[in-house]
Image (cartoon, rainbow, N blue to C red; front, side):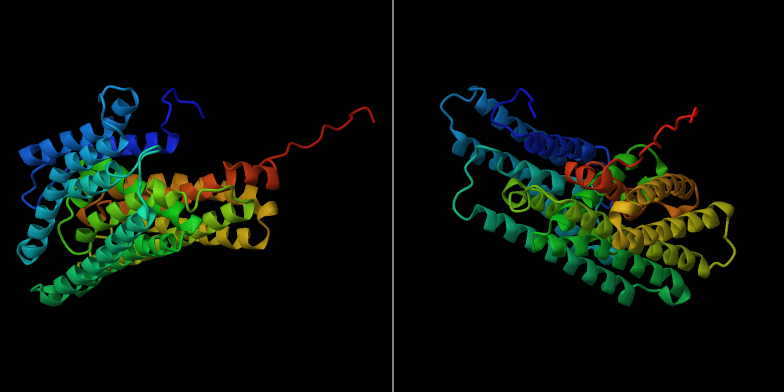
Length: 407
């Protein structure tokens, strides 16, 4: 694919575009537990501008605008420009974890900046990586993934064990714990597969990362999502910054090289089934959370609440039915599965819209976006877009042959 920028690949351009979007979205969403936006903190604003400037260096270097600076020197400058952002992230993370019991935490801006910096610091095409660079990036991804899981477990357990008054709201406390379990499963399972260089794991992991970014973009547009995704105050969501950075690392050039090759139709079907399995898990657990959130009050079963519950469980059913059909004969059932999942995507949009207009217990998170939209969307894409799938299974719809009316 030609893009008029010799020496830079399309995947690198996509990484730069996503990083730039995440960087500037950071300025419009919550940064810390004092509910200041990133743009309200001068050090965050400066960090974002420096990280954004670092993205331009490979282009300037290839255009000969950096004088005698070579690729190695340019890469060092790029890393140096991202140091302030790393310091800002570490400070707010440490402060949020230390003051966790006093309402500590951090906003979605920290999550976005973590992923953006991980993308910005990665080597691009033509930049030196050094011996064993892929091993270092893989180690970084593993440390971030494991660190995120540990933080999720520790913060959730500490909240559950030491928060006063939970005995009066046992069901809602269990719902919070179940949200943490759901998030760990949706991030943890594909992360574990990505660590083993699984193509399906990497594709699904990137899709979940996109759900996090989309949730934060929505958080800048209205209250329906901002109360949940715009603030990562509380258990589990504290770990999302680690997960976002891990997703960016596993999408890096040194690690993507290990899974980038021509994939067969069977492998793309595996991607679809894996994504649908996670979507079903997310929707079923979300349904249980919705039940638990109202069990203590017992009197707030509004029409929008019940409608969302029905839609969520319908999406889970569609995902499970699609998995079963793909397992039996994907060539024969692909068209029907695509139709079923297209309906499920419409139901997902409706569920998110209805849920976002309901009370605070229904506020949307990246978990909802991933389970209801991103993961079924990945499955539809895997069954319709790749050339090997279309060549192996043919078109989705074959019109009937014309009949001779005169015969």
